[in-house]
Image (tube, rainbow, N blue to C red):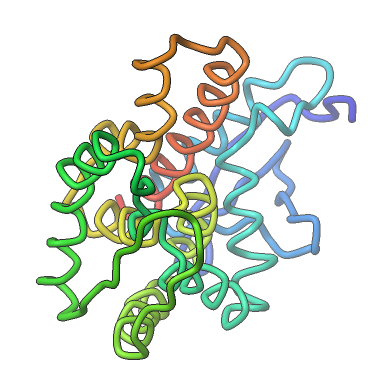
Length: 232
């Protein structure tokens, strides 16, 4: 799509902030006003629109995309979205360790991942069943219920960020620790790629894997920034 506007602004509107292009309100794909909860997020999204050249490139507007998701998807299908996020309570990456032939990897996972699980145990009064290998191991109903309740308590914009984050991280526990401020993004990202980084240490780096990881990291950090700005 060609850029059709000259000026980008944001204004206070209806208990939030709205983006305007040449004085006209921006609409989401579902035709909702692009209304944001904080001035900080509105300013950042306005900057994305202002930075566009002759052609509008949605891939350079991750904050806009996440806001659209909050307004078009989470607000309309909140139960379904929260359920998708909470589903990781029964399949969190942190539950699965190397198999019996990978003791060194298992020890490394325990060293790096167990503190996260210990945080969640204390924070939500839950327990976890860990397993070796990749065969699914169901968690207790109490654990699933309590982590699901934690997810459901968040607002639409936080859930939009969490949906992106949990898909990239593969871990609800890690995302909850991030949202609650117990861990920061720079600490969590290597933990979420622990096995891949471990393999690189053993066998050398893979350029394609490193490029893919860098792309995912950029998406992860964009969602973290969206989360921060939506609460500022």
